[in-house]
Length: 532
Image (cartoon, one colour):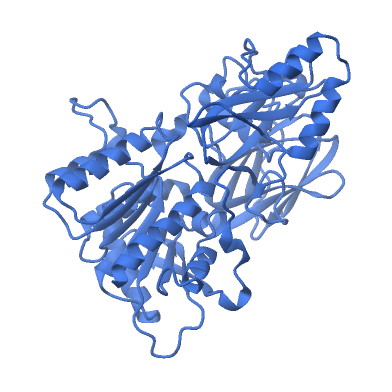
């Protein structure tokens, strides 16, 4: 997702430098050291650099009281992490799994941290307009009454705008230490100021209002007091937001609904669809099995985890089943509960039983190389991975019943794998695919040597291939070029005469929470067609 570094929906630590004035702290810890302690003051902004020696491990940060405060799930390689101390005292940093190397790069006291710029207040919410008027009239108790109502109703505020949109107002209850709130959400913006909260006069009400489509589905987080200022670079901003981004304390609806996750590891949810998440309640008796193995590729020269889902209750001698290949395994096993979705759809008779193969990324760097239209990655899948799966599971060798699926770069990968190897993959389920991509970052203006949408142009130039498509993009994915290039791909495929091209636009953004529903839609389209 290299182009979407401009987005401000930040899910993982960046590897870029942070040129802030601060004094380095401790030297690197020895690789064998399992625990390290840091004495911090309230509000200290801590940046760490860690090196992970194996496929995956975790770094747990414990608060001075001994409680689990932050947990960072990490893959092999070097990562920059950040957090802000919420209380004074000794914080313990403990490796879960094999210990890696840890270095404290910066520890910046609150008084030395940059502060986001304040901007003139613009009121769009009718309810906040009424609150401001009441405050101006000297109604001293109206502020407490407002927060009591929000505590009862939950945030954000949703108010009528017109036939197509609603006003959505995100809220934060500030205090004397509040310097700013940043909205971390899957709606791209070229300007960091667009996602900053405003303060309602001199009250403790901080807010951000946006016009959103009716039926909106959206996950988001809030970053209180992010340590960046007007002169901070986008790299500074990413790190600062990562350090504090967390679930909205005023919104009880969270995703994933996992009580074991801390507030930093879950998102808050707005769902105006009127529908529930049906698959989270699938009975245990209907659940399939999930097995994970290490898989070494000679073609790619690396090793990754491969997780295979098999449906519940398959009898001996069951027919060879359709195969779903899913990229970005961590996303589709954790944030998007694909095994539960498959359990639900199969149990309800909405799709035939199928096997799913989840392909992990060895590192963040390998993802950026392998997924964007890489023919060697397509060969790995066709010549190494699928034969390996077929020797172990009762799955088909028919490309028309072999579906590649993914989101963002994973959606681009699904289409490019089918393009390069239609003999192995004959169906694509693409969610917000990054079709703006071009080799070597050459996403320049059309008509120049560096043209965007490389795969779209290749498909337009190539003879029609035996591939079926389900494509989707979010209504809010405009600034990132996701929706425009997905529409363009749909038009290319239709003009070339591809007989099966399903296209859907959903009322949301570049968002795992939305993609789970699109995944279910796409599976019903492609697997039903495959079994007809």
